[in-house]
Length: 392
Image 1 (tube, rainbow, N blue to C red):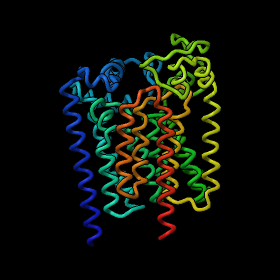
Image 2: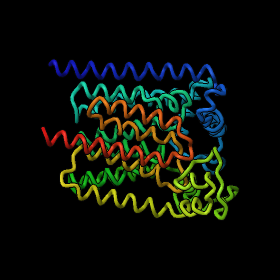
Image 3: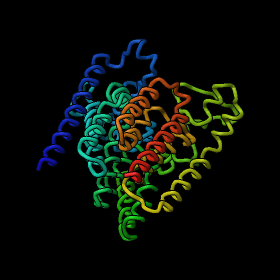
Image 4: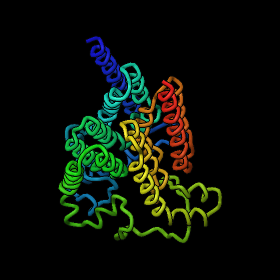
């Protein structure tokens, strides 16, 4: 009884802090309405909400067709959700409401996962770390960027998966991908864990449900213009349709508004040939990286929930590190909650906050390399926790 009360109290604290923090961040953002002062501009904020998301929603509500009449880089659930919010209210902040709500729900969901691996006190700390994550409050709470819906459904999928509700987990993971296609990077981890923990029948169910939902909710775009739809979502080897001219891969250039890949830093430093070489061959590196992660998962002697969650973190960091088309720093907002779940002692909380702040002040062209830094810290924390456990 006391344990249940303690657990409920911790859960309530996490919910309260998370929602209050997002309310304050959203209030700050509404005050600026996208016109941020030079001091904030120096920290490299993104203006996608004002100049991209709202414009796309306006086109969609005017009757233009997604992907065909205007370019959209996200799966359909993204624009549907924002458009529904705008139909309810036409205020500047209306489309941000679902983003703030999903972001506020991430920390409580992380708390519920944490309760399966640590006690109530540690779970509360983990939930509060996520609720007060500087990177999340900055990019999700103030600048209203796109990670919150996909992050929430990804974490929900992990929770359902850990609870043995495989079919519901497949549904949640598919919804996460239909908000942001980058979540697809975690699919091998789910499949291998299911193969190790359950039966082939459950694996077939999981894949079938996941693929069916993706296909059904990608209609009519997948049926009418599949090549254009998949190209817009960033799938490799898809031909670039007119009027979008393909980049000249014989010349390297760095544009601050574009995503950055592993080779960008070399281009910034004047090593154009090396930057170009890396960009052209990263597709093979990411295939090799995920193949290695899959082999690792298959060879772990006793795959437990900690291993599963840590490999979800690794899969997202591998994507940020190696994706050829490039990524943005705010992509880390979907990975950091899984890093927080590695909390074992008080210094881990300082590490989490330090990594958040480091990410905010890091130059964008170094973003992919920062994924390696987080991997090293996550691995070191896991080794230390394993050593403590073995001594106990």
